[in-house]
Length: 206
Image 1 (cartoon, rainbow, N blue to C red):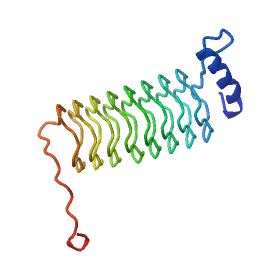
Image 2 (image 1 turned 180 degrees about the horizontal axis):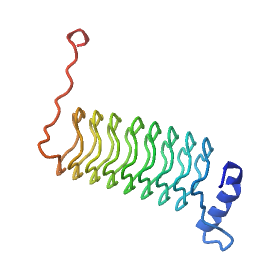
Image 3 (image 1 turned 45 degrees about the vertical axis):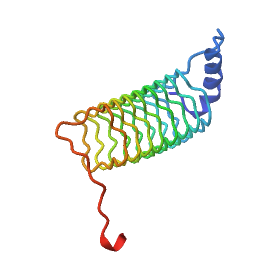
């Protein structure tokens, strides 16, 4: 199983592969133990990372577009500003991960666990989030245009100013979700859904 001590060679060969150099080799880090790895700004697009342990890894501004991360453990990983467009993150564990400002256009997050993740201002346009766990997350100002959120758990999520235009929220759990100012134009809402009013503050608070 690949570990952090093998990373320099794996990354070097992957860069050659991306440049169509015959001496290169696509990174295969499936099931690798990369817990706490420093991958700041690396280009791992198209890499195989399914089932890898990336707990607390530093993936700040990393390029993981088209990467396979299905079932990967990304608990509390630093993924701020990372490019995850079209990446496979289905059933990945992302609780506590920092994804602020990340780019997840058309990413597959089906069944992913994102409770406690930082998703402020994240781009999730056309992402697949069906049956994902997003309960209690902060999605303020997030771009969720045409996102697939059918069956997603958004219980208690914060979505003020989020763009959910043309998103599919059928069968999603929006209990207690705060959506003040969210753009819901053309969105498919759960049957019987009624927009939650802003929470009332106790008199002594306001």
